[in-house]
Amino acid sequence: MVNVVVTGVAGRMGGTILRMLRDTDGLRLVGAVERPGWSGPGDAGEAAGFGPIGVPVGNDLAAVLARTQTDVVIDFTSHEASVRNATVAADAGVAIVIGSTGFPADGKARIQQDAARIPVVLSPNMSVGVNVMFALVAQAARALGDAYDVEIVEMHHGKKKDAPSGTAVRLAEVAAEALHRDPARDVVYARHGMVGERTPREIGVMTLRGGDVVGEHTVFFAGQGERLEVTHRATSRDQFARGALRAARWVNGRAPGMYDMHDVLGLRGAP
Image (tube, rainbow, N blue to C red):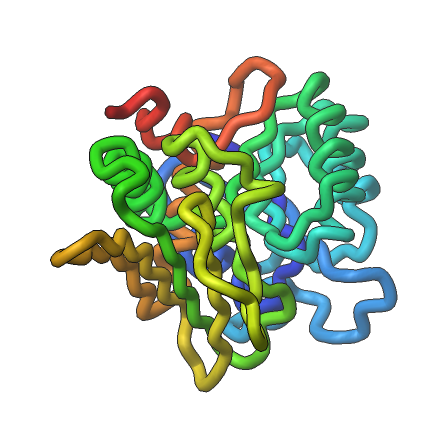
């Protein structure tokens, strides 16, 4: 049995993870955390929007870890909170699964430092389907090569705070790596005005926001006379939660290091 603490239990993803964890074999909820100053329900189940489950909500992850026998923390909060929570988990010697997005370079660097002490699964998208999409995009980019232009379009609900999505950024990185391009130089995140002709090395990433869209991503490979599209559409948050719970089972007992869902799903090195 893997003992789990979930952070951000009153949020959309935290609540979904909490709900699904109850019915997942091999995992047991031992603690729940909300932001400092939380004044909502004191029971984790009620904070997540369903009935009481007898697990109190704390507002200090370090204190919760100190009083519980925790194996893994699952964190879908914000990039700022996730960086802090990774350090708290590392100080306690507890593995962490992070699904937050929008990390700046220094935030990722701090998590990388913590991964020298504990196993960390960090992924911009925990969906099994999206991670298979990463592998398919890499394979397509290598096979099609420079003769095809790569463009990425993503759409999410209007309440999403970061843009583009972490998944779209990772798709661009995957394509760039497969095509031996530099994401810092060759990925274009905005076009407006007289920008000139598209350069052959560009990988465009466009962002749409509106409605209640859970998440949609399409990678276009546009060639002469044909176009290949690889699309993933999420219709609920349940698949993200399933992936996070799968990652929690997988990471327990692993050696310290930085992992992602390719490691969890056995896709590392897939053609």
